[in-house]
Amino acid sequence: MCLFITAVVPHVARTNRFEDVLVRHHTRFGVLANPHAKAFLAPGEVQGTITRGHCDCGSSLVGPGKRSDDALANAVAKLRRKGWGEAKIRDWIATTAPRPGTSIGMSPVEWANLIDDLLELDAHDRGRVGLVLHWYRGHLETEDLGALRRVRCSTMELRSPSFGGLAFDGVHEFGRHAA
Image 1: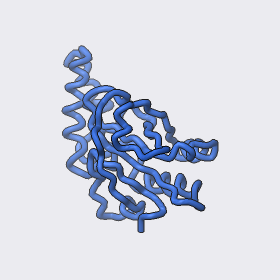
Image 2: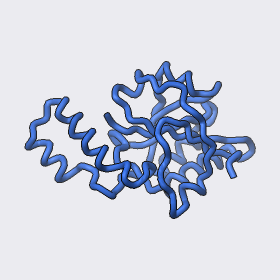
Image 3: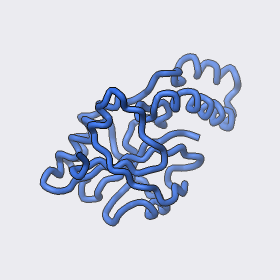
Image 4: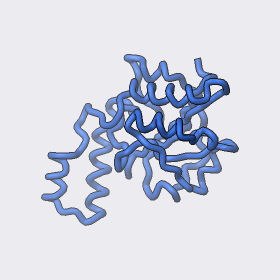
């Protein structure tokens, strides 16, 4: 199992300016063609990967204490299934694995800045950006996530010193509607 953070955006939002914002924030958007996404996408929305890494295990969007221990155990199990030997796994843990109490990727404030910049592209309208955090057991384009509940959010939550992480398996919708 690996954690992946995917984004949900209006299909029409994907312009050159959209891509420029992603490049400026050192990220990218890769469209996912998952037929099961219809269960939670609104008409005109598209889901895609939003980070550059292999997976998002250890992300700062997951609250402290929910991050590294589970991520490490899941990653080691996945490496064993791939046929990695114990020596190679120990070397990976020593050099690459997420550390307890640490995060990888963007900070919550950097996520807030990215989302705000994407929302600014559609300032005249009710722009929106959704984030989905899901522990995938299979492939991103075939796994059934079910009908995910939508939760309205504000980027101010990500900027709060008391930010405790986003919940798994929901569409966290950031937009002009959020206060």
